[in-house]
Image (cartoon, rainbow, N blue to C red):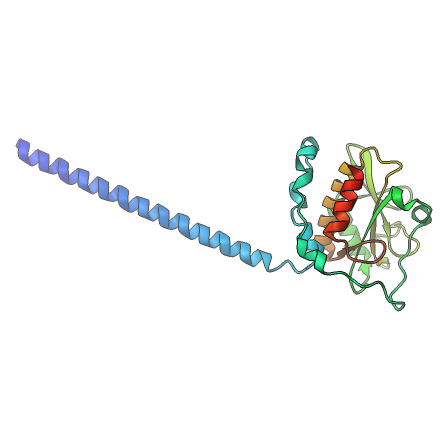
Length: 237
């Protein structure tokens, strides 16, 4: 093979290699674009299944926060949907079932107690199997008083009483057990780190809301809003 032919062979190889690289780049760009479109579409579909127009949207970001060593950095990451401010629920009518509040809570000074109620808006009952499954997946334990409690590093963070008489969960594994919902509360008199405890309670409330498909109310039976959460945080700072 003479020098001229050899040069032409090298030129043809170089052109073929450049063309292959170009086509490979186009293929990769096409794949990335398709993945981006699929991801965007999947996110839109997922969001369509969020049916709770109130606190579900408010608490969506809670599961991203509160690692033990990042509490102070993450406290401001919780975001609440401002649209919730526009929707308020009227006080309960007389015909609505009575919500039971244990004596240990009725005897507390309101300023020393944080309490959020988790229940269905139509007062539909939660059966024992539902309640037990949700409590188990949220890492809640039954204490000696029959209340559900959440512990972090062996320290009590918050407790949960039943919204139905007698207010405890001793029979939660009984086939006949039913409750109007959960009363999640923090006793500030015995809480060593109220702000961290409140953030932890909100995180667990988010999990329970998703599992039980309930909403979150104040003891006054009005829906919990961003203003309520913000006021509580300011009080605890």
